[in-house]
Length: 342
Image (cartoon, rainbow, N blue to C red; front, side, top):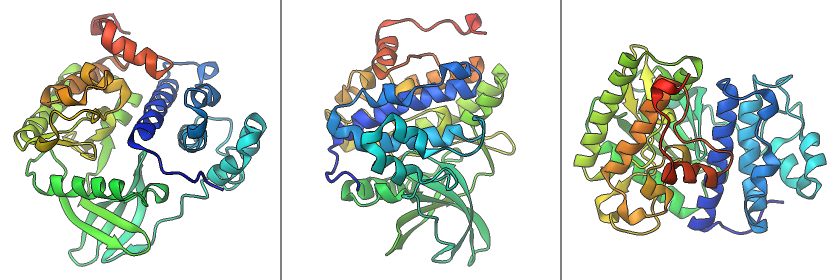
């Protein structure tokens, strides 16, 4: 049985912050920055939230663990019995989230429909905290597209749906060669709303960094193009608030595209408290301090600088085992010069 209360914005922020730190730690292991013995311990991150948040937090942590486990464990299977033995009081949560070892995927993750309106789903091409992205074909216009589908457990809340549709409207109003354009928004009575965008064939900067350290000229070309996209967005009265390698797409020619404006801050939100958003490892100081009223375009530039640092060094500028350690690094420590990072 799932938890029976809706999370407040503050509670969701706590969960997101802990999960960001957990995912960052896993990413370091996958990139070879950490040994297998240094794999992040799920229980350590679970203990960082108050008791009433344990169930929703555990679901998110298990989803991250499952994602990074594939291709980096002794087998592709992930055994729910192991987690039940560690956290017997959450047996129902674990079995619901992971199912059996053979099943290998969350019971809460129902497969996507094969068609949505005039779109035929082909395959999954990306997955995030709130949505999954699929490659599809527009059967009317005969072109390939990307469809962003909210996760089933993220759909019910009206405020999330509003934010999701806000992203579509924001993107539809911006015309820039480095910003992924929106083609359509589809509503399905059984599965919710879907955003249809241009399909970018290629990879993400995050995946590129895990494979190799970028040559500095290549990194600068990517960052320059994203900076131009941000300049355009800022001119439209928008602050992205979540600039990071995972939100920069690279097509087959190496051209960069900025995506995922789901956390964008509009002009009318400037000066309001409590809207810091972002991913912890790339947050600006004002975001790390929770000073949402101070966020503006300069916050995006700080995050873009952190992204450039990681692209050329292969390592994030602000690292730590817990959210509080990363916040401390952002607020109180100088970044190690890139020339000193091997």
